[in-house]
Length: 351
Figure 1 (cartoon, rainbow, N blue to C red):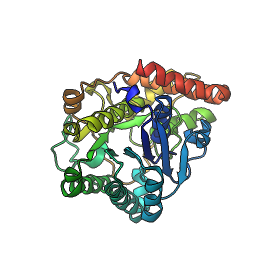
Figure 2: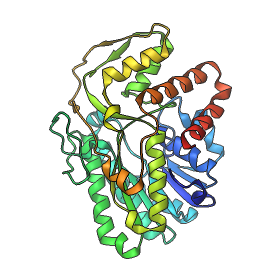
Figure 3: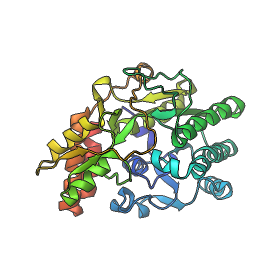
Figure 4: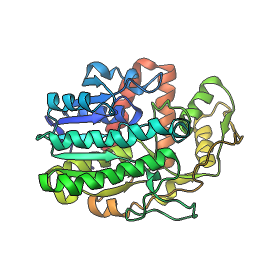
């Protein structure tokens, strides 16, 4: 588990802070006493966790596009961050088929701009680029768990753009950051779930929308296997990576951040569990919409991050879904208590 005391008083910049993972990350950093600076477009969904928690007034939040190098660099010069988390991205596979050019501009050139700002900002000491489990060349081989040394070549524009983001990061490390002594890592996270995600074309938000309307949930690909994990799992690892490499550059590297095999479940298995935990007669049915290609099987080998950081997953899939259902029902029924519930989940996880 990461050292909360390390972040007290540290200047931390988070791109994509208005997104689902970004909002949870900023909440943890606030509670740890960090000086948090966020750079992102407006919240990508309505509602959004960032808005629900009223975080805009609690951190130094700058509205901006990572494709705008001049604006981003001026924010770096203004804030002089020591630690940088790069989460800003176009993160939806299906959206990448609709807008491949915009996806590449954001996910590739956004990474270039971010790393260039880090290169030009003397205060920066530790950087983490968050990519995805979908960066690997995937032939859908069943039961194959990808390790960090396997080829990067994502299939769809989103996955491929994140492969490119990894390669850009590798080049900057070798060309600039090793010489400057800046520690830079990438984290390839599994499929992240949690309370406060309202994105389109994601399975848990789809579950929540169906539950809210009292409708039968439509599932496109119930037999697809994914490495599902609660959002607090990867965030705790991200915070450990950036803290340890800040003090010892040998920790910098490329890491899979995924659950154990027991939590790599089918989408149908996940929604069945959600329906059971939600109750109230909730049900789902399989209705394929003939959408674009998405991998049928995806699993990560997490042995490296276990070995280097001594990390172990804490909330397995059943516990993760229980927390999501609890958070969502409080949000629906007692919205005034949702900030308290969010903080309670963080506190429970970090014990």
